Amino acid sequence: MKKIKKQTVGDLAVIACVIIICGLWFSALQSGGKSPIAIIYKDGKIAEEAALSEDRVIRLDGVVIQISDGKIRFADADCPDRLCVKSGWLYKNGDTAACVPSKTVITIKNNREKAPYAVTF
Amino acid sequence: MNTKKITLIAILSALAVVLSVAEGMLVPDIAFLPPGAKPGLANIVVMFAAGFLGSIPAFFITVLKSFFVFLTRGATAFFMSIGGGILSTCMLCILLKIKKLPMSYTGIGIICAVVHNAGQLICACVVTGTFSLINYAPALLAFGAVTGFLTGTVLKYTVPAINKALKNFR
Image (cartoon, rainbow over all chains, first blue to last red; front, side):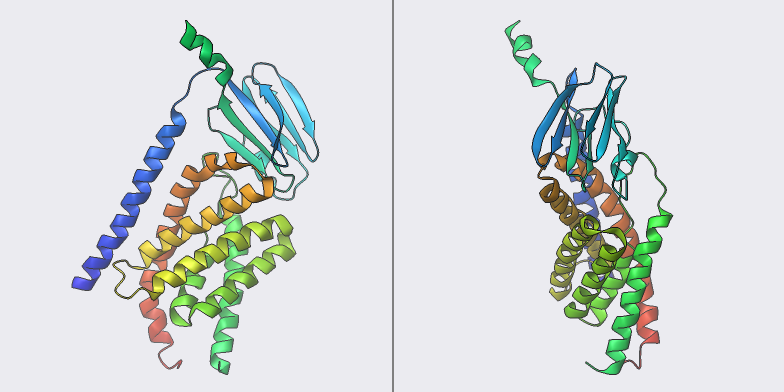
């Protein structure tokens, strides 16, 4: 009986750790300002920094990326799983989608270029 | 290594492969789930193998499952599978070696699932060469904790029954 209780304590400690870390991490990602930009990485290098304000379609080797209505997504991909397409639209700071087979990653960042002006004024 | 043990490893390997294929059909494409996240039901089998047969059979099953992934889903999926699998099986074997671990299979399951997802994320970062995938981490951590809780708890309540069934095994 005592052993079972001790085990439960360990389980609860693990669950509590996970909840705390998740909570902190999610809230850290939530912080952010306006005018996010999408950074598209290909083979580990930045292939394109796209503003989300202008609708367009970007074609890279193996994937088709679509920007529409302030959001960005993988519209199509050659890979078998197509997990990147299933990731759907990205628009918030920290939103990330990846097509691992074609080594393409899209991540949303708040536009840092505007920050100094805000400080100056 | 007697015939009984070899047979049991073979059965468990087959079970792990089948579970890893079947679970792909179970998960609906819900938007808020991290894409590609799966319940990791095969981890039930690996955890049982590690507890009942030892570390080496557990690693054997992990590698065999990844090899099956290679045959059916290709090199990228294989790399992700083996990265997560080896890391989580290492963690599992270490945890099981600790005497008087204040934790049941539920806690072990959560830790292993989280470590598995971490391993996969590291592999994905290495393959794409892009660190920004770390943004997936919180969602994978939360999802891994839920699935690990489920798989660990399933094992916790089935182990007594399996032990009874395999009473004459040794």
